[in-house]
Picture 1 (cartoon, rainbow, N blue to C red):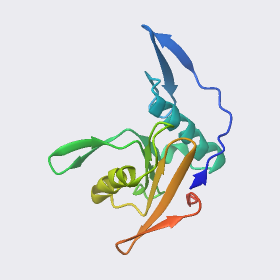
Picture 2: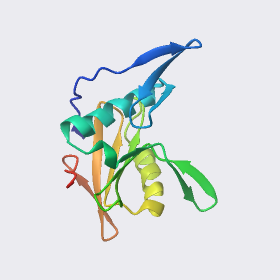
Picture 3: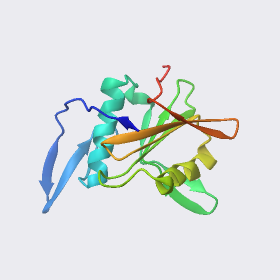
Length: 146
């Protein structure tokens, strides 16, 4: 497991019609501040501020088609050739990073075919490299070669 030390960030949070919302600077919209969204927003800032991933190469909550089923991934990072490079699945903090979570991101990868997968629950994450039909666990999140 990889421990994440998040950078400080001045999140924009407000109360709208009795529920908390947070401004997502990637989607440029206000979204419900759920436990999973809190993890996603912090992880996005980690990618940009700590790992130096260009924000322009990050997509949040886009729809993909798996056969006849529409699914939404949490985060996809693209390479400079605009090819999907990494899929990140975010879970709320009390969710264990287990085989079920890994299977979810592996299912997305059937369509996307990225070389890197990450699952996170905010406190920890696991990173994997997909190569030659093998999944290899990594000791750190890969460096985006932008």
